Image (spheres, rainbow over the protein chains, first blue to last red):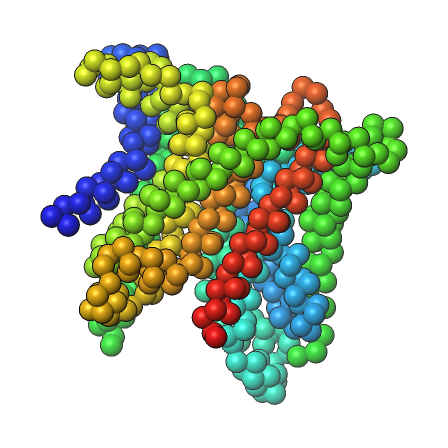
Amino acid sequence: MKTIGKRLYLGLCFLFLYAPIAILIIFSFIESKNRATFTGFTFKWYQALFHNDLIMRSLWNTLLVAVTASILATLFGTIAAVGISGMRKRMRSAMMNVTYLPVINPEIITGISTMLLFVYLKEVLHLELGFFTVLIAHITFCLPYVILNVLPKLRQMDPSLYEAALDLGCGPFKAFIKVVVPEILPGIASGFLMSFTFSLDDFIITYFTSGSSFSTLPVTIYSMTRMKINPQINALSTLMFLFVLVLLLLMNIRKKGHQSTARRRA
Amino acid sequence: MKGKKALALPYVVWSIAFVLIPLALVLFFSFTDKEGNFTFENILKIGKYSSIFVKSINLAVIATLICFLIGYPLAYIISRSREHVQRNMLLLIMLPMWMNFLLRTYGWMTLLENEGIINKLLSLIGLGPFQMINTQGAVVLGMVYNYLPFMVLPLYSILVKIDKSIIEAAQDLGANGFKVLIRILLPMSLPGIISGVTMVFVPSVSTFIISRMLGGGSNMLIGDLIETQFLGGNYNPYLGSALSLVLMVVMLLIMAVMNSLEEDDMEGMLV
């Protein structure tokens, strides 16, 4: 009896989580535009989606921003983390407070404050809002995640490893690449992945910093939902859901593979 | 490793330029009028909007509470399942989070509409139609839906660490289910509760998308009010900054209270 109750509860929770997604997927294959009637099966919304220049351009912009911002934030953040770990306690905790600011601040505050700066810069330097302002904003909100992932790894590392490499004749740069980077690589990798997914998914900060001529996919989706009925959104949601599902399954299978090889080795 | 801290210099400069200066600008604009003179007018004007502040906090508190009530049993059930079941269920909870929240909220628009699926199904059994979209309830539902994983994940990660034998010991000593919950589970999971509550409350209270998509025009929240000052028809960054400043102060106060709760508990545990 108890397990039935548990299963029912889990079932209801997952129904709640997946109902809106299921609805979007179903409607992406239905011909009628007003969502009141179920008429005929169709792929036409998918065709329309792929011929929608605005969406395709936004998708490209999104990928461009996410790849550039996450790579730059990872490089920049890793170096910053090494620097922060070398600071004295007071300086370090001051720096950590600044690092936490974008993480705990509501996104809308980060968005409008950065927008204020960019609007000011536009007047002074004639820097138009667009790709570069979005890129700067994305690097800024990704940096804390890289630093917060890399710092614990640096703390776990034995500092004498680096010193040993120096004693054995490595230059500081070579010692860093050969000894420190492999030790902190898991932190760098998860910092990069978090940056990439947050950048890909970000709406609020991009919305305030992109200006009128540049738009990423979430911003375009937002302007489409303002027009209420547009079945292309359903098709887009279905494709994104499939993409995420496949990605997660692949990651899971890879992880399982790792575990079984590890077990075999043991 | 001397000279290492110099590596942080570019980051220090970057943070000053793109984190601290923007926040300083918010502060500056809050106390400035259109001619650039110092003024308290923006801050004083906020009194007019106090009902919107109250409404935002109110709805966010309700949403956080519902997230907790749904999320705690869910996290507990997951944490007591077999290991591979745990992993699969966590994946199922995280999967929707990877889809853009605009799309998920759009899905709810489809469900809740007057001509939507839920009303259709209800009419089959002779009920309704009910007005669901463009209500406060729909806004709360959107918040709960979008931020429930933020509650479940921290709760799960703390509940999974609680040793089964502690619960069994309490039961052996005569505690019933309710007592186990009140005396053992809740106190031991307090850090998870605090981070879950913060992670749901902060985005809920400052949202402007959910209220606009599911609440229609009549359910304006503080986030919407700020957004319209910057990107709406009447561009007014002065009032917008003042509103943001007040929102930030309210948040910091709430977070300070939350943090002190946790510290008190830590001391209590040590003594």
